[in-house]
Amino acid sequence: MSRIFSGVQPSGDLHLGNYLGALKNWVRLQNDYECLYCVVDLHAVTVWQDPTELASSTREVAAGLIAAGLDPKSNIIFNQSQVSQHAELAWLFNCVARLGWLNRMTQFKEKAGKNSENASVGLYAYPNLMAADILLYKATHVPVGEDQKQHLELARDIAQKFNNDYAVDLFPLPEPLILGAATRVMSLKDGASKMSKSDPSENSRINMIDNADTIARKIRKAKTDPDSLPDTVAGLEGRPEAANLLNIFAALADAPIEDVVAAHAGKQFSEFKQTLSDLAVEVLAPVGVEMARLMEDAGYLDSVLADGADRARAIAQPNLEEVFKVMGFLNPRG
Ligand code: AQP
Image (cartoon, rainbow, N blue to C red; front, side, top):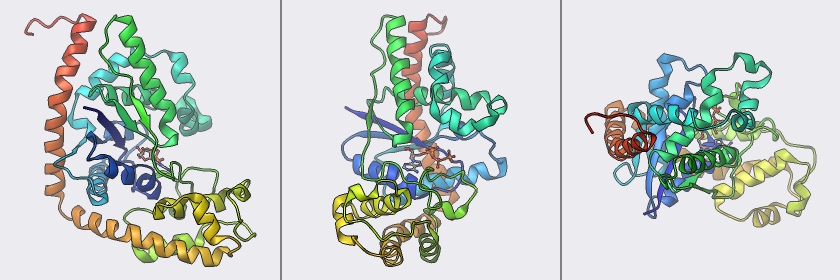
């Protein structure tokens, strides 16, 4: 059976980009695949996380996954640090991946910025941990946003090199699943930057937990340009903020971008933003309300994560033992 692995970092509030680029699509996959969805807390600490906030962010992501429609009984939902096999396999992959491969990763360059000497080693090796996350379960498919495609390529390179080096056929080469209209939601304040949890501007993103008034205010304040909306998709060329708002509309409405552009051709942004805001509130506000309700019940969320971790470990441990055996580690007991 095809198996899916994907993750979300508990590095801040879940936002519209996470919802449209990931969660909404994951909900569609749950009937056709065996799915593992992981709150990747080991990835989050590659940049500083306040220890007093990490646990609540972890629960918030779990609440977001469930509120978006993922069933914790049919899917495996857990946080990464509870399954130590992720870190163990990541170390082995540190010894498989080549420095030249990691040097090409654009996300490290973006996240480390000009001060890369001061970035953590973990941030640099992040793609090796992501490869371990996926390959630990021999996942066959990984739903990813555009931004994660390069990392998935690296996971395939690691799987391939491991199989070649040890002359085995142990790891499948995981395939990307790039789904939905909004594979890359951009910041509401800058159409050239990705909407991101770590953007210091709250107005750059709509959080899944935002209430109706906040959603409407953020859309009203979103950056636009002075022209009215174009007649064709080609007319969005060179207008990143307009393209972003129309793409968000298309993803929320599950409609082709061509139809959305045609329906709003020639409108002023003020009128379009009102329609977009009504749609965003209709889709997101109920998810936010459910998230808030779940977050009141930390005991329930913790029990979902503990149960998910038990089920994840049951798959991970035999796979890791197989890797140890292939690599020749001595295990006098086994
Ligand atoms: N802006 C986005 N548009 C579309 N998809 C997105 N995803 C994230 N941002 C966008 C997708 O959401 C899933 C979980 O991502 P993540 O939280 O693990 O990592 P990230 O991509 O690094 O997200 P952020 O918000 O940018 O976090 P920070 O600021 O902490 O780095 C992934 O499938 C991702 O593609």
